[in-house]
Image (cartoon, rainbow, N blue to C red):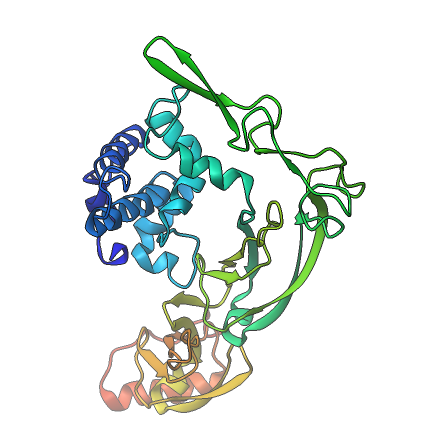
Amino acid sequence: MAESRDFYEVLGVSKGADLDTIKKAYRKLAFQYHPDKNPGDKAAEEKFKEAASAYEILSDADKRARYDRFGHAAFQGGGGGGHYQNVDDIFANFSDIFGDFFGGGFGGDPFSQGRRRSRNTGPSRGSDLRYRTELSLEEVVQGLEKEIEFDTEASCETCNGSGAKKGTSPTTCGTCGGQGQVIARQGFFQVATTCPTCQGNGQVIKEKCGSCSGRGRVKAHRKIRVTIPAGVDTGTQLRVTGEGEGGFRGGPAGDLYVEVLVRDHDRFEREGSHLYSTLSISYLQALLGAEVEFKTLLGKENVRVPAGTQPGARIRVEGQGVPMLRGRGQGDLILQVEVKLPTKLSREEEKLLRQIAEDKGESVSAAKKGIFG
């Protein structure tokens, strides 16, 4: 399956390949494994889908950067990366690309003109939308339900997306016979161009819907609540089915992908499910041991400091890290010990410390005014 193979390997390019090299590699594979060139060959069809998935990711700078960092995991669970189940979706998503690859004005993809023309005249799915939201580390640890707002286009409810006045319906274009294109012969070539009458829709609306002026879509301001589970990280994408752009001609809406960006924290650093921070203690607590109160992301925690703890030592507090996605447990809090030494001592403290030094036979500076004043 496509997920199990490296996308660079699929296209046969290096990780440093530029966009032009990636396009050329995809063109070669798309032509080689095109379903209409290999009728009934399931293996060729799977390679065609696999190449399209790889091209979708590597030709997009943002998706390629996420893939280079996280691999296939960046697009699991509907993370905005294509793994195609239907070859028609490939032609729909890459219609301009296929036109460029396979001859542009001379009919685009030489194998699939009929397939793509028929798709233009029926219901089609709306585009997916992307929304980026910033979260604090506290919100990541707890999870939350967040309200988001955005502008989009929705299917017109008055005409159900048809664009025609209520009680009427679009009619088949008489110029192109519903194909959306007209064919002209130039010497040995047949040149396909967009139908000038229906603008490629294959249908003509004689009486337009008053609500959408015949577009079948209207501007919409959306406000929805999204559940963000605990444990997400920067780059995590959450799919909200059916909340994307409205469909065309009565087709279903696309999906909304909410991408997470986690803000840096001033006290904690995150590595996976573990949190790292600093625990400041006095030299007496380090020497004698103590139980120290530490403020975590969710409250206060008593941390046991063993006697004789050295500066730079690490103390692990189990279960106080970041929850793992899908309920697989919780990471730990790891505290690096910082021992605070006093800059001034009382006369009694100095006397006691000098006595200890004398008992241990350690050489120390003579008493004088300075830090021990």
